[in-house]
Length: 491
Image 1: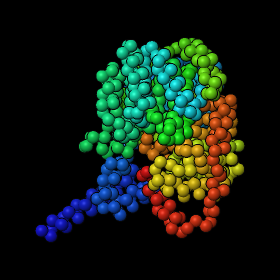
Image 2: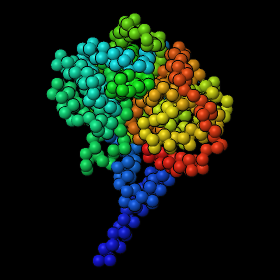
Image 3: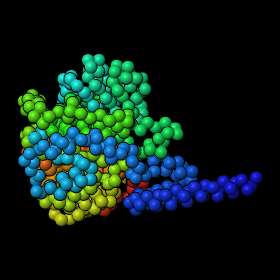
Image 4: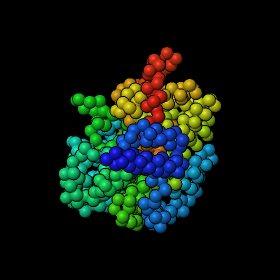
């Protein structure tokens, strides 16, 4: 029976070599290629399983045709052509063109953004908007928990569905893996159209478990939209037994909501294969302007809001788009910055282009600041990020550790002229593997408002230099951090 043993080894060797050749032909970043090579070599059998579930590259696959994309965005295109006197800021014209040419992310004027940094405020605004819906409610979320808040939002959606409002919900199957099916069945029985994103069921879709929809988008009647970092969960609301996660979310009004609507409708076609378009989903610009003016008067005093003339761009990225759109945008912002770039992210495992851009900007004298939590909710990620953090410090980046709980915000501010808020972490997963969305806002007033949000967070953080002697860390600690760093493209 010895020959069976050797045949098994031979077959396994062929599979491993074939997999390694596939990884090489994918032409990924060298660091990511090397990480997978090490996994395949040093983790027999387990390495193959990890690659099957988490490593396959789907960027070249097309899940939605260009014809369908054109149909989904036709109304947006028409409205864009009607934007008279659209002025693009010269400083960021190339960035705006980059997003427009790569992913069809059109810039929209006459828009407004309200900033929410507290779960109570955000969820009150969300439930208020849902309660006022008359035609449709569209929600994409990574997580909707079966907790008091999740059930409250679910009941509000069911009430509107029973009143004749079209209600559609997309949740990520992996993000909601702890949520029982009965929660979503209750929504369906109440008239809500519900789909999970890329459900992980063996054997279907198991090879795509690594590619998740991390977006947090809501659109109500095509006139009001929400985007940011908050999932629908009690963790964002202060409780007796826990400190609320710190996060940032925006309410958008005006023509920029077209960009959010487009993002949702593309996602909906992805999960339902139904083309939804028409004037009801893209109301006229005059209607949006009047609603925006009315809503700005009713904005809560605790939120911050921008002037209605603000220029905005909703940018999405995904593993099936030809280019990593948001990553390239971050690189361009860093390399074009003149004064400062402030970044908040809960997880810092930067790709090589981002790390290069941060180092280059800092060495050129730009005030680059990075604010991350002192401790994150995944220990392996925390260990892996340390070597990256120290590398940025050596180049002159100021790194701050947030002390008041877990900061889950994802924001960027540059030179008092540009700001961005969305679902994007500064890590491999967000830039390469996840379906993400951010809004880029080109307005001095809004950038200064978001900068004050950053400074408020920085006031609750400590400069990393103050708590760590970089030259005297134990050898074994530095070795472990470097070893874990090899796995960072896979985390």
